Image (cartoon, rainbow over all chains, first blue to last red; front, side):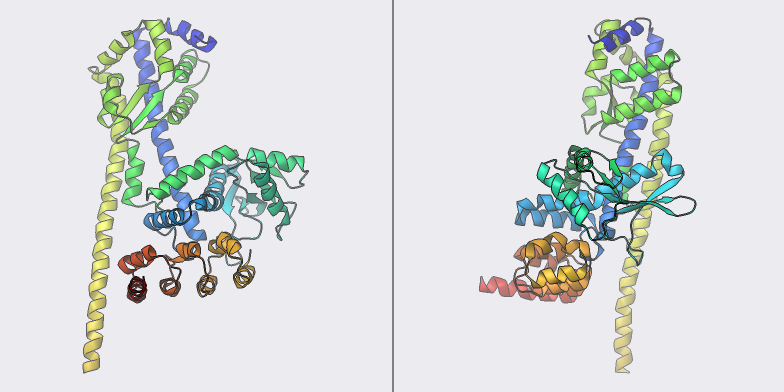
Length: 392
Length: 98
């Protein structure tokens, strides 16, 4: 057992069943919250990527719908499997790299004063070939441009690739030493080594960018890269966190945070946020809930979100409580309606919000279809009227 | 790269560079100029066959390098009857000559 786990074990020896139930109650709520929000955030981020790509490559129609993007990618890969690098340059280079940095700036504390926006051309349009700059950072109150930013999203860290990227940046006819160069660690390290005068900023690593590009490629391949927020598909995806196929994993850090909270070392917000973050990272999507139901309070299982007790946490709990005792404890929770109330309230709120939105979106879709039908009939009638007018 | 540079690359038949940059220009006139070249590579056609401008799609439908699978998709799903008709004509002529 590691030093950390021994400390947890010692603390757990002081726990009684009531403490353990409170821990499960608190951390499961935090974990569920973390899973749902991270799932929603990730989905929204993909929509933003699709939207930016559709704006930049509007005339090609490629990112107009999820289906057109899917056809483009599949056609290109079957014509030339080496196209993958070009596809990554579109999805990651023109899309995700910039979206993630904008989200990072606008989601940070700095966003109280500043905001990041995509650079536009003279006509005020976001295009992919704005001279030397991808983004601008503005003063939120005066709209004054504080920094101009070029984002590089290399997904390989080969010396040649890094060198070429820096050469391109420096040789760009719009190059200026005041443009902030943002890029993966490997690129910025090399830029520092070469003594490039521009302000430099590390954002992600080449490996992070590769993972993001691969994730987006799969998304496009599966026909899921939609650029509209208000679609039934979007709402289904956002609601998935609370509906089906999700399970969050509680690790040792969950109980460490809970113990820290119990001992007054951190406050409740900090404990909740830490557990939410860690659990979202360990989220298991699409897991068979049947297998984990034993370890889940029924409130959450009822809506399909399972809580998995990670093997690391299980070991320290077993060591403190005796093997099998913890399982008994959780099994008892299944008949304890009081403990499930908080889960249920949380779950019902999320579920109802989702259902209402979904119903609304379905109705809007029906109205849109009806409108299209009426429009079609109108057009036919116009043609008919025109024909008759000519006859007269 | 601006549109004039891209048009020069098309004139010079620097197709590898054109392939890398044509989508970024997002300009129908550049698309049409590329598609009006007989040796316009298939990969560019795969980037442009879903273009919003029907005139661009008509050039795709008429182009000898357009893959049969693309012509078939255009015949079935293009929302412009003129594009569908031209794609259908190309498709059947190509099948006959094959």
